Length: 142
Image (cartoon, rainbow, N blue to C red; front, side):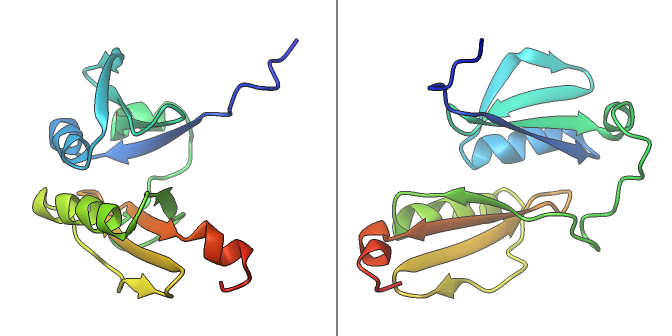
C-alpha cells in the first residue's frame, strides 16, 4: 500500500570528474552532505527535504547505464530548475555558485512576476534558479 500523502522525492544523479571538487561546489550553493549514502565514488547531497543530488564518479555513473557520458560543457541533455523564495535568494544562490567556480552560461530573465538566473557547475551541468510571484500569476498578471 502506498502512502499517497507523502511528497515525491527526486534524486538527481550527476556524473562528475572530480568528486571532492564537486562536493565542495554543491556545499557552497547550500547543499548538505549525507554521508549515509557515500563512498569513494559517490556522495549524496541534500538541497531540500525532497530534492537530493547524487554525485557519481564517471566510473560509478557508467555502472548504471551503457550510454556515453556527454561533455556537459558542450551539450545539454537537460536543464534542472530550483525555486527560491524571492529575487534576493535567486541572486544569492547563483552568486554562491559563481564564487565556488561555476559559470553563468545564460542571461538572467526578468519578467516582473518571474525572475531567474542560472549556473553551470564545475562539470557543466546547468541549474536554473527562479522565483515566481504566484499571487501575480494567479491574478492573471503573469
